[in-house]
Image (cartoon, rainbow, N blue to C red; front, side, top):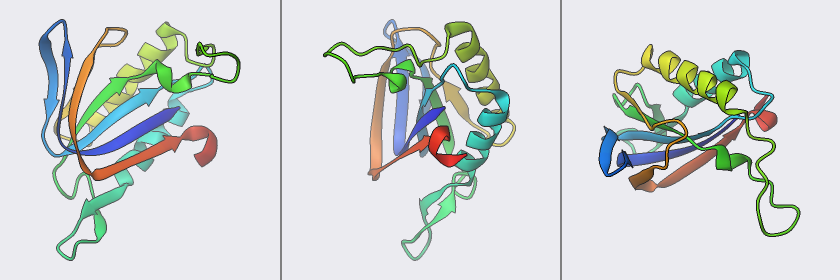
Length: 149
């Protein structure tokens, strides 16, 4: 599982010219799910995500978590995070999770995050989406379960 975490001042996702998700201060998460991912891996990634202290405190130190600043989440499924560009110029996506598994884990992650964070918005799994954001910092972190656990 891969998460590209972007600290944002605001972010939104649009499908067919309709805004379906929008947040103010928080994290925009681009979420890639592989064939090997499980709920156990998802739980570990969620704990790491929600524990990240990358918001500034009163002294300007990155010492506050999403909960500390009452931040929001916008989570967008992004199978292209598993692009394999080793051969040729056209990426292969064979490592990306099959749609049924990936959607199930995506929905699981949304539900689990909603237990901890008051505002959790989402994209539309499998849809062509337009994502807009104002990256705050910029501050972008890549979490990869293959490197963390």
